[in-house]
Image (cartoon, helix red, strand yellow):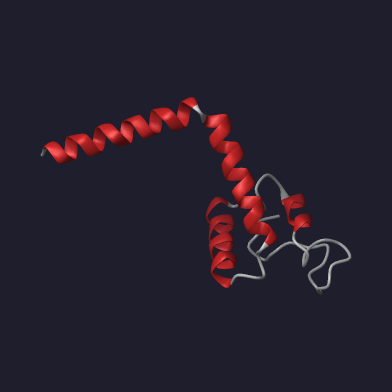
Length: 92
């Protein structure tokens, strides 16, 4: 019982800290997601994770579909037939 109370207290503290430091948390998540976008076609597990996030949240990229310009396969002039495009999981 005491362990459950400690866990709940820690979850509340974590939530309050995330709320208090929201700009820093958002900036960190945005940065990490953009790093993941760069490696999208190079890592199949990462690709599946990004597709799942984009489908679940009905989004495209970290902030908008232009985030995909940082991926060499999707940027215009890239070495892929997908150039100037976005993955199928984007809800554009």
